[in-house]
Image: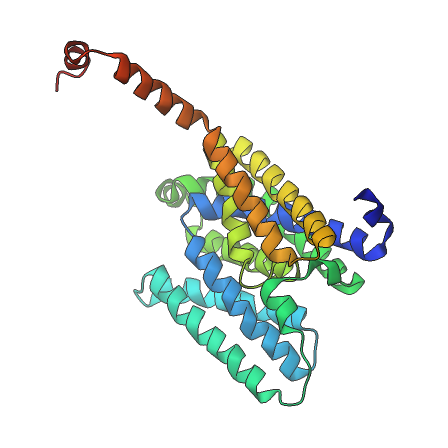
Length: 290
């Protein structure tokens, strides 16, 4: 299997897998803890409109997807904040309308050959050097902002009211996070695809949450799950000649179920159930008087 690394396309794919797994895992921790999974799904599906716009205008779809996803993310934040509309309703509006916009543009591309399958479901083995450089640039932006605003984003995640009380711009940092989320989604499109990228945002972080309740540890474990899932999925897809995006997501899902089985919380629950089962009715009544 390691002999595959002698090929340039595989080396590019491995770097792309590492970037995708790490960035999605880090942003995914915030997404899971803040309950923003639906927003991630909405922005990822909205990227289809940006990709279709790139094909329609005959320019790099990656670049148009960046601009399009940023605009959609900011509009979701603005509409939900200013128009007295719940976030899930705003996401639902842009989820459907941007997908419809993409379908309309694709329908207008008569006689033009476009590789929509690679964008919809991912094709990490076909990533070009230019696309890889764009991914590296976006990953650097995301990681730099997270390191620089680590404490602010942490406080916003766990106690937005306290953040407002101490003078932190909650609205401003919400928009910063939406920006990071949009960039992460675009970065991951060619690796796992528009349809599946939201899963990679949630599953590694959810797996880490089964094993630890400390934020820093959760982020580290999430990155391990994300990167290893991408590596294993990449090699399996190359060896078995199957879809890379689906293989990566299914690998991450497998790790999620493993983390559930070995979760410390689950072990404590099993121990408690075992103790209760050994108690006589009289002992149970004494330990639970109410």
